[in-house]
Amino acid sequence: MFSVDVILQGLITGILMGFIYALITSGFTIIQGVMNVVNFAHGTFVMIGMYIAYSLGIIYGIDPFASVGAAAPFMFAFGVVIYFLAIRPILGQPQYAQMMMTFGLLIVIENVANWIYGGDFRTLTTSYTTSSIVLGSVRISMARLFAAGGAVAILAALFLFLYRTDLGRAVRACADEPEGAQGVGINPNKVFYIAFAGGSALAGIAGSMVMPFQVCSPSSGVDAVIKAFVIIVVGGLGSVPGALVGGLIIGVTESVTSVLWSPAFANVVVFAILITVVAWKPSGVFSRAR
Image (tube, helix red, strand yellow):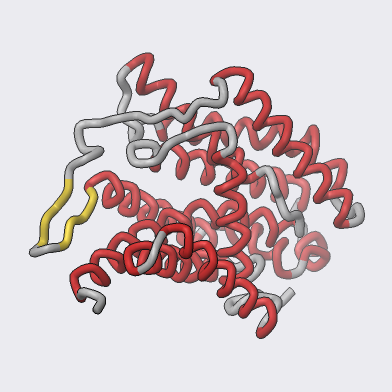
């Protein structure tokens, strides 16, 4: 018989992780929604953010959450460079060309990380890594709580940007009606590189914030992009609210399944949800009309 406390523990952990997954996926879905490019290298941007936090922590003793101040501008600038060198030339090209380009980026970045840091797993221990808030028989990880709180704050800022600023409205206009947006004077090239760089920055921020309780290796990027791809399909292609809902669904499902059965079985359930959604509604539950 399953304990209520065990299920509650799984729910709380899953919700916290769901917000973090949503932050990772929001950058992925903005890039896909605005440019119609599925960026398979997005997970490596998360991995770079993790290594930035790791390096600053080991060398200078900087807290991973403080390292966000370095990861965000670095990844934004990195995203601008990648956009002009690799993404802009393939815009409007067949989807297989876009997929091969971004997959090639994934391989290149992963191997550069392996050359610099090696293939060993890296961890960064902080004063709160093993700290918890105890509520009865439920323990809430401080590190995950801080990361989830940061993710919520950044997602709220992202919503305000998209719906309350002129640039955010331009981003949404290019996602909904690219030709119409250009007709009213919006420069799509400017919006595209800002969207790609912004999505890259969101990935780097998420990577920095998870470093206190996750291990990092060059292959971490593959794990992140697979999870983001599942969430974006479940939540809906190009939908930021869908990324939030999809992240919570996958986070809770993964966590509850892990505590009730085993972590190995969690992936089975997660991908079973993916198969069900694709069969029922291929565009995703919260897909945005295009």
